Length: 328
Image (cartoon, rainbow, N blue to C red; front, side, top):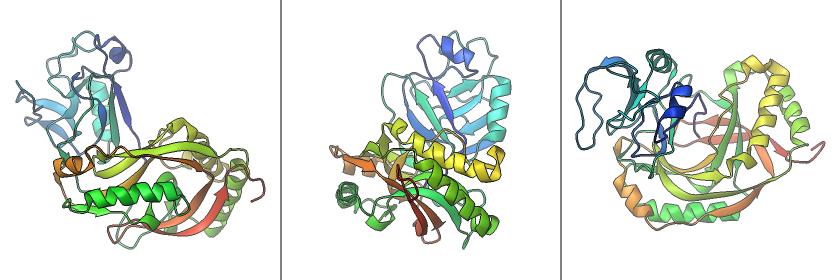
């Protein structure tokens, strides 16, 4: 399970010209990758980007995006370099308006993707996955659409091999086979969704997914994420029609304004979650050289009632809808 929320994608170009047009920033060219919001604050004198020559400077509208000292923040000293020069020490500089908007918009766990830099980013720390995300509390459950993998032996084998490699890594809650999933689209907490609305959303999803063909994707290889271990599902575009159909079904019943989550998403399958803040190196070492992936065809999506009380996402299946299957 991942909370699909708002996200920020930041292109880093050598001349930064495109960044200015997107109200983005002067971005360090040393690290591409997907990271997530850790914390936010109005100002800080501790926004230290840790690389040779790092600085200690008063900056405003800070959104922390890593445990190793990378932030998104208002550009100190003005905006003269945005779009013209790479004046960052490793953080993401933004316009004053842009930084203020993001600080007030971002939640912990929101994904941030840095693109266009010369080499991939290596995480130094994994953060505890089990903090209480907005709306969640002990005992509360959520209706959501997932792709599950009980009948996908290739995914089960990939996950089992990864669990063997990771079993001695401290601070990881590894996911048993029956609970492997690809988070697709939330609906709402069970105490806020009526039975009639749930039935109507399910019927609308069946109708819309009848026009969506099965999707061929590859799951893997496994890699360290900000809050655990997971596998990308690619090409992501292959699964986009599935999610669009489910979102449209919710809109059919509730209207577009009430469809949860952002339209952008990141299809992935988690293999384990960090149960506490800790170094990423043991997991990276355990997975070194493990390049296995699973080529599968997604033929159905499940509406589930999800809980997360035992450091594990577990569910009761409410409905299974096959792709490209009218009336089923």
